[in-house]
Structure formats: structure tokens, C-alpha cells
Image (tube, rainbow, N blue to C red; front, side, top):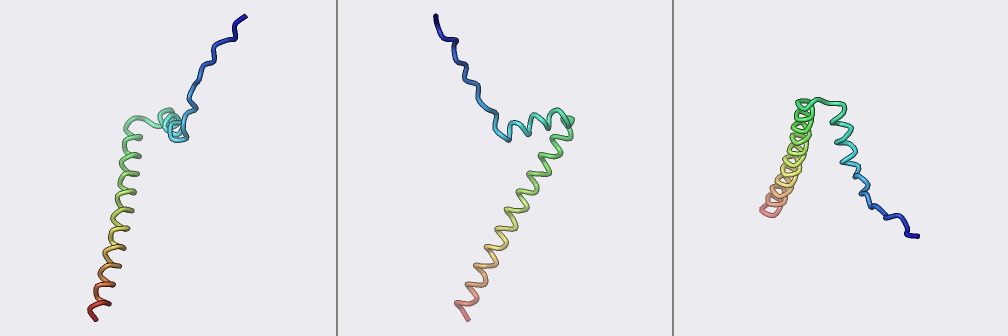
Length: 66
């Protein structure tokens, strides 16, 4: 008697699960708008980090030349 074949099914990631729920709850246009908004948030965070770094470099430069 042979054992039944084992089927390996990948467990979806948390992100995959969220996208599945999103596709059920939101229309295509709403999904696009949400993703665009999130992309903007990430870009704003990156720019804020760059501003903080530029300010730090400027302050160090001024301290050295004082």
C-alpha cells in the first residue's frame, strides 16, 4: 500500500493575505488610490530623513568652521 502523495502548499505571507482582503473590499480605483497614497507617505518619510541628515551635516560643518 502506497502512502498518499504529500502536496506542499505555500502559506501565504501576511502581505499576500492583506492584498487578498483588499481586493475583496475595495474596487480597483480605491486600491490604486490607497497604494498611491502609501507611496507618497513613504516618499515623504524619505525626504524628511534626507532633510534631517542635511541639517546634521550643515550643523557639523558650521561647528568645524567656527
